[in-house]
Amino acid sequence: MEFNNNLPIYIQIMNLIKSKMVLGEFNGGDKLPSVREFSKELKVNPNTIQRGYQELEREGLVFTQRGMGTFVTQDVDAIKNLKKKMADELIDGFFKEIKKLGIEIDEIKKIISERIEEDKE
Image (cartoon, rainbow, N blue to C red; front, side, top):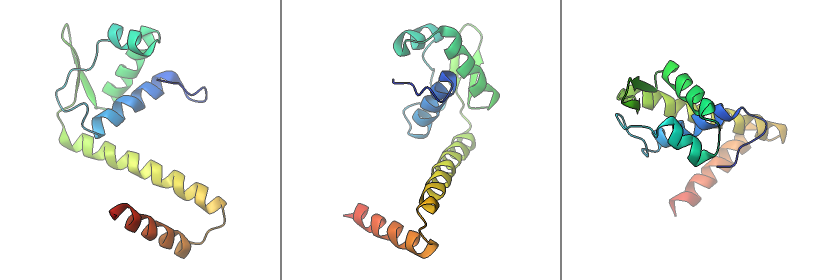
């Protein structure tokens, strides 16, 4: 994984795990890699992984069982809400950037409709 210097690494790790959760690569109840394992894989300090896991736990997306590891939440609604939140953030960023181009709402709708039709093919 290549890290962006503009965002703390633990947040980038959280985002990676969140993406894997919404894509179904990590399902409810799945065990996440151990802190040591994941730190070796990503070539980061184990404390960075631990901080990411703690923040994910604070958000209710994972839970820790002492001596067993860290697991993905089995709360289906939490994952659905995460997916919606991530989609909303992408859309917000899209609108922010496209408005900078001076494109009106009707033109944005047209562009999106055309893109949807292209994707159907």
